[in-house]
Image (tube, rainbow, N blue to C red):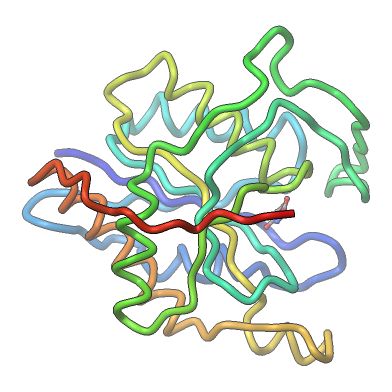
Length: 220
Ligand code: PCA
């Protein structure tokens, strides 16, 4: 039975919840299509350990599809990350107290990897359903980018992992109450977005459509 692995993170930076884990837990025991079984897991917000946990999960479940999800407090959109870079540069210590600065994630690894999710199709589908979403060109340089890079590095040598990527999500409303002015997104909207995202990936298998000709680029 093919597997879809969804991961979220434990809380970090004095938060008591992490929206990514609140979201991913909603998918426990679910399936998609005729036979895609979902596995969910929580990753530690720790450099090194988080990738070790992820690699154990990948080796164990051998998923075809992996979407790792993390909190991006302050962002307004459901953000599909496009690129993971080979760099740790932590503004704050992780949950184990580590604070790597200007370090490679994989020594001699490529500078960056691109997501293998059908980004434009996902954006288009979610927008059609009224969910504020965008492609992001940086997952930062903290634990989320670290895990994203580790995931794509693994995918690079495991072709059976056909679609892998990372999504950053806003605060939940309960968190935004403690960050006046910060954007938030309800758990219901996040759940709808993630269902549509997975359905779009599965739909991608049915037909190779190259017609998505719209830009989500930025100009500095
Ligand atoms: N967000 C952090 C790490 C864990 C999380 O949910 C990040 O964006 O790096």
